[in-house]
Length: 70
Ligand SMILES: [Zn+2]
Image 1 (cartoon, rainbow, N blue to C red):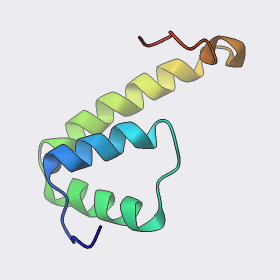
Image 2 (image 1 turned 90 degrees about the vertical axis):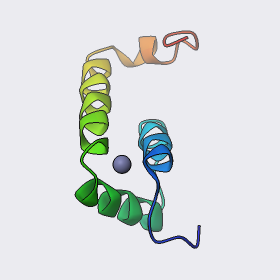
Image 3 (image 1 turned 120 degrees about the horizontal axis):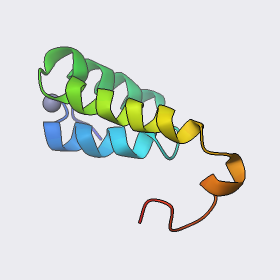
Image 4 (image 1 turned 30 degrees about the vertical axis):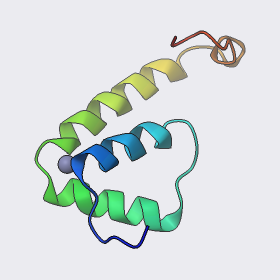
């Protein structure tokens, strides 16, 4: 923390993490800011969103299988 801009690598990591756990307010704000400034990351996030939406169709019981995305 303490930085006002994320690198693309940090933004990608944070986007992935956001699929698994809620981000803090600061993290979400900075990530959103990076996505506004960056041309590459929005594509990556869109892919993540697509995967997340796809995984929502999986019943909850299956989502808890640990090796689902191994
Ligand atoms: Zn970026």
